[in-house]
Picture 1 (cartoon, rainbow, N blue to C red):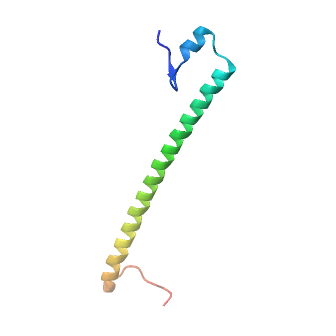
Picture 2: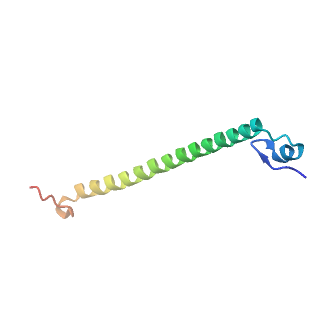
Picture 3: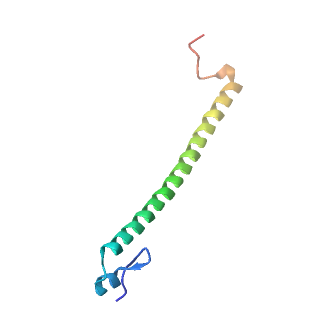
Length: 83
């Protein structure tokens, strides 16, 4: 029976050999925590890139719309009530 590997450690060997000691468990939990942190950091980087791309798209749409409105001043939809 092949054991399940987590962080390159065969858990079946740990259980069957009776070698599950505190140091081994701490090592496994530390490895899992570092992998989880790395995964979360990668996810955050991807999320940030998507947000920046989305923000850029929205900004370019707004800028393009305002540019079109500036070209068509007689037909301008937005009115400035401060004048």
